[in-house]
Length: 224
Ligand code: ADE
Image (cartoon, rainbow, N blue to C red; front, side):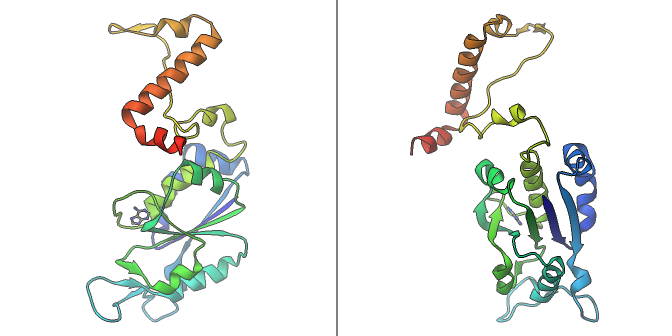
C-alpha cells in the first residue's frame, strides 16, 4: 500500500511513521509513506496557500491550486482520496478494514477555517474521526493510518486483530497475565483451568457484559 499525506506540516508525521508497528510495516515493504508539502505547489510569490473568503467572513480558506497541483504530482487514477474534515463520514473499524485493502490512499489535510469547495471534487471520501474539531487533519490521518496499517496482512498476526474490539461487533473481553494474584486481585479461575471451551464461553460472556455496560449502541447496531 502507498499512503500519501498532503500537508503543510510534514514534520508532524516524522515520529509516528518512524516508530513501532507503522515503521516495521514499512521496513517489511508492506507500506510506503510519502508526505507532500503542498505549500511547495503554491506557485505564487509568497507561497500563499490560503486566502480571504469571497463574500466576507472570519477565517481563511485553503486555495484550490496548491492542492490540485500536489495531486497532479502524485498522478494516480486508482487512489482512495480522503479529505479530512469534521463534517465527513465517521471513521470506524469497518471503514478501516475496507481501506486496508486499497493500493493507494491519499490524505488531504486542511488547516484553516475551511477548504475552497472545489477541493472537495478531488476527494473520493470526506472523513471525520469524531465529533470534535481539531486544528487540522494531520492527527486524524495519523490515527487512521495506525488503524488501517495494522490490518494489512503480514503487519501483525491475524489472531491479534480478529478479536479486537469492534471487529466482532462487541468490545474485547478482559485479559490477564502473571502474577496469579496481585494486591489481592486474583486472575479468574476459569483462565487457569486449561478448559478451552469454558475459556471461550467466559470470554464471550465477558465481552457481551462489557459491551452492554459501556456501549449498548453496538449491540443495537448488530440487531439491525
Ligand atoms: N479536521 C478537523 N477536525 C477533524 C476531525 N474531527 N476529523 C477529521 N479531520 C478533522
